[in-house]
Length: 538
Image (tube, rainbow, N blue to C red; front, side, top):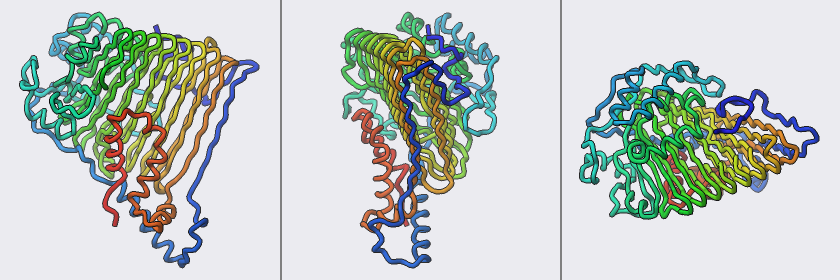
């Protein structure tokens, strides 16, 4: 059972941003708001230019910044693969059809129908800063899969075009060509097409498979844990996902086992006017450890597509889960046409003492992002961490953040959020630190830094702090900075071109988060940031 928060769903947000109601509290709350901008003086005063010349040169730097940011989306191509796609629309018959297609047991169908009926009674949340046209949920297809053999005994039975698709994305599904210590579950539209190294992992006792396979092969584990961290009716999008979810990954690490390799899932949307609704469940028993990575891309369609996912993590005593994400969905064009609507619920439960859950994410895609990876620290001495970089450009909107719910004694949490806003985008950080009366000696540190590029971008920070125990210590720091045209000009006066200068500034700004990513993701993140921040400079 989830702890009673006294405020309803964990997906709701407090009305007040700061609430420290304990009598004689000893809560340390330190808030710094820093607004900095490059100086026009300093060591460059030797540059003698007329005001008109300086203005023209700075104007050129401003244009350079936009060129650097407007690199075309590299993964916007479409694979020509024959697929079976359900007609648009959502009703109880569609839910039953999805369950029948996947040959699910009766208890799973009951789970879906209960979620669908709950969803019909709920309203889409409107409290975020995101502004977008009303979504027509009857204008979406909720299931699409490539036509292939029903049971994949080997990669030889997978459509070669599917394999080429993932090769083109840099995701090799050939175990003989493994270049790093990573097992991969490849999800294409609504189905998993292959999972590598299952046999090798099984020798260590680790279960790594698609959610569809887990429901059939490990029903007792799925029944026990699915919905235990994120209840069916937690929010509008979790109810929708619970009704129509297709595939995702299932991970189970038994007591005392450290996963011998990194586990990874790559999500690819291909079909147009089709939503993706994956479900991921990761369980670490006592003393277990696993590091899980996920990535995603989609074609550059002119119409918006819906992505609503649910991720549940559960750690027993002395267990640890490290969950890393590089989100690179299509963000739409310069004018905001097309792009993915990304509504994701991610939550971890540290129910055992001395357990730990770490979320690390790099968010660069999606037209709309609504996502708050959170941790409920129920076990004494448990630890929750959240490291995030959110980069928005052009017309992108992101409302992201985290929640750290302290329930057990001596629990600790750390939040480091880096937001970068360019073009006409809007980037919002929304974070909740909640310390319940039972959380004696709880500690939290939060750092929220925003960087603005150009004159039209916006950034907001909404810290919510609720302290119900006098022995708790909470620290919150926030800063806002800006890459100015003049700052970029001075870099170039030292022989550093505009592209490299912006890259250096961004890299330094995000370094604390990048250092938390697994080594297997380091090259991908550096390349991704380069694609977002580099381009031809005139």
